[in-house]
Each structure stands twice: as C-alpha cells, then as structure tokens.
Image (cartoon, rainbow, N blue to C red; front, side):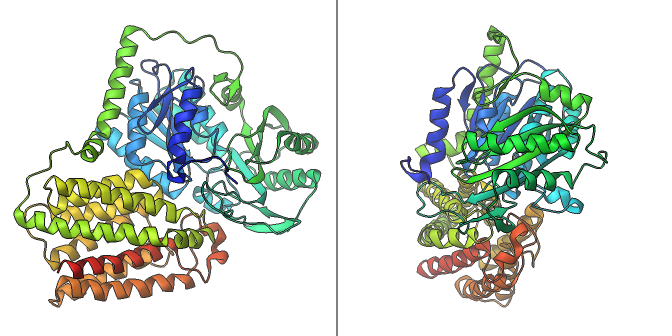
Length: 594
C-alpha cells in the first residue's frame, strides 16, 4: 500500500514537485508537467509524452536528451487534461513541430486529441500516436483497441531518437508507427495496488494464484492461474508473446528483439533477475537475438506485485534507435557529452515558451484569484447563474457523498478511480462557478468556466466528457436571456451529441451514454409538452435512474472495462450511475430555486 502521503488529492502534485526538485539537472517544471532543463534545439521535433501519475518512471522520469522533450503528468491513474498537454507541448516546442505520445486509453486519446487540435490552431504542426502493445486487452484483429503498458518505452525511445537525429515530423511519426507495430507486451500479477488514502487494493488475487493479462491501472487480469515458479512464469510470458508475431516476422529464429522485463511496483530486482535468466534462455532456444535488454521498474502501478514482458522486434533502423544514447532521470543508455549551455536566444525562447504555457491557464488561475473580468451579462442571465451555481453545488455534494461507492463500482472491471476523478472535477467546477458568479457572470459563462476547470482538474475520460457536457450547456444558455426549459433541453441534447461524437460510444456500449441519451430525449419530450423545467427534469431524471440500473445487464464494448466484460455483468457502469445521481441532485436544486 501507499504509506507516505499528505492529502491524497494532492499526492500527484506533491510527487511531481519533489521529482523536479530532485532532478533539476534534467528537467524543469512547467504548468502541467515537466520539460527538459535545456531548451529544445531549434527546428527539432519535440516528442511530448504523458499519462497519469502512479507509473514512475513513466512518464516524467523519461524526459531528457535522447528521450522525451516533455511530459504532461495527470492525476493518479488519470490522463492529463488537454490544457496540461497544450501547456507542456508549447513549452517544449522548438520550431520543428510536436509529436504527442501516450498509452492507448480513452481519456488519453480524448485529451491528447483535443490538445493536438489546440496546438494546430496555434500554428504548431502536431501529430499524435497512441501505443497499443498489451496483447491481453484485445485480439490481433482488434489491435487498435489494445492498451499501452511497458511497450511505451521502446516506442517513445525510437521516436525520440529519430527526433534527435533531426528528422522531420512526418518521419518521426513513421518511426513511432513502425516501432508500435512491432511491439508486444504481456503481464501477470500476484496482488493489486492500493491508491493513496485507500484502505484496500483495487483488486485481490486468491492465495497461491496469479492474475494473468493485467493492465497498469489496477485493472484485474483477464484470468487466473496457479501461482508459478519463476521459471514457469518466464515460460508463460515468453510462450504467450511468441504465439503472436508481427505480420512481417514469420519465425522468431534469427530475429533480433529489444527485451524488457518490467517490475510493476513491489517485485524486487533480484526476483526479476531470477525470472530473466529463464526468459533469456527461452528466447535463445527460439533463436531470438536479444539486443540491449532492460530489467527493472520502467512502467509501474504503485505497489502492484507483478511483472510484464515486452518484445520489440527490431530491424536495422529500429535497432539503431534502440541502442542510441539517452540521459534522463530514470533511464540512461550509452554516453552523451555535457549539454551545450543555452545561448541568449535559446534562453529567451524558453522564457517565451514558459510565458505561453502560463497564458494557457491564465483564465482559470485568474478566475480563482478573482481578478478576471467576465463578459457582460443581462440581469436575467445573472439570476439564472445563481441557479446554475446551486446546481453545481448539488453536483459536488452528491459526488462527494458517493465517491467511495463509485470507486467500488468502477473497480469491478476497471481501475477504481471514477469516484476520485469525479470528486476532483465537480469540486473544481463548483469553485470556478462560484468565482465567476461572484464577478457577475451570466449563466453561460458560469457553466463554461466550470467546464474548463472540471476537465482540467479531473483529467481522464470523465473529465473530458463532463467538460464537454457543461460547455455544451453553457453555449446553449448564453449570457443574454433567461434560459427557459426548451433552451435547457436544447443544451442537454447538444451535450448528448457532443459526448457521443467525442467519445465514440453509443447506447448499449455500457457507458454514461446509456444514461445521457435517454435523459436528453426524455427532457426534450417533456419540455415539448410544455412542462416547466423542474417538472420536466424530474421526469427525465427518473428515466436516467432506470437507464443507469439497466447498464448492469450490459457487457462493456468500450473503455478499460471491455477486456473484463464478464466481470462487470450484474454491476452498473460507474459513469452511468454517477450521471443518474447527478441528474436527481440537480432536480433538487431546481426545486429550491423555482
């Protein structure tokens, strides 16, 4: 378990603060994460990686020459927000464009995608690539749905080494694609991990058993087997990976591979070496030439007792990039001379990048301090903003009351962080709304300010989707008129369409969409009948509650729960359940402010 922490909600921020204090030779802090201590060379592609906290040395520990130019760091097991990623990428950009790289998780895909759009709008050429190496999370015919685990490292490194050689952005992206297509990983675990402040692990493994095919976010494995010896564990890992070779590797004999035996948190180095001796022997027997193997903790999951094996099948070009030197806080290879000191121009560029990154969060930060002006709003819209604030207060209170329950539901087949993320997001949204309301904002501005802070502070899939919901509502309500029931229904309908467009889920996938769509439809129908808002919302909230309960009978087709579909049967979706709770809480606020 995690024993040393202060406020669990501040754990990720405090860990990053300590990390940067300890490693100033390699990194400097920027809003949202870290970048290299020295400016990106002019014209070089900046490789910006990122993901949630709890996986050190991924992601911040991999920033330095020969590897990443920057890392966006999210909360515990939650993707960084688009705002954080945009800030780090802006600070790392050296004029050659940006390649965003991350593990293939829904929240990361959403936030990195949004950040890429913002960077492109700023005139920064940007590409994005998701690593998808975990063969247990989807079959070969659905490889694009696989999650990224320890295979992140060789794919990140290949792209970063290509960037160091001065290749243009499109060629660096092609290197990442080549490395990703040739990387496979598989893992096992003997116990789950415990998040800071939690009193129990996200999953448990029965005595004398092991979980097979686990992820790095505390997800349970896809199956269980008897506890193996070290040699038996090595045999399982090697045989499983050799059964699935890249399309252009018909036979492992005579092939070269980068090999990573990764400890997930509490399996000690001596144990890893015992396993690796057999891994090396088995690969040698199969005719595989091992190139620069890595044995140690490279992508972890807090205190999970587990290991994973990664093979990246090399060609001449990928071997060159894998062997290339690197110098980061947590990963070093070969020899690099001392970095050249920043020239005045580079220092000025870095200062300008920091300024741009700071401007990225200026609206939110200034709003918190009460110094940001708000758009002009009508008296009617400002009165409606009071109702919006009361509704967001009700949302924060109901989420806080049910955070533990939401986490337990999420842990059945996911990573158990839904309650934590919803609490962070809803409380941040309420604070932002309070500050905007105090400054005289209208209903639309109060909602859009709340949307930005929910997305930024929560991160993860739910952060992106709830930011989208609140922003859609804010756009519909605006700051000029008193919003009537029809306009509110229009905003909810728009939010439903935006969430489906952004997340790609539809009704039946066992996500929040299974509640959002029927809720929006019911609200639109009730307002079309001429019902007042409170009454129409009551009817729609009842529909939402029934729809959330109905997700217990569904099998997930998207998200982290998909590989554990059978385990989730009989349990409602956490995102659907939280949305239903929120719709009922908002109804109470509407009654009080009727």
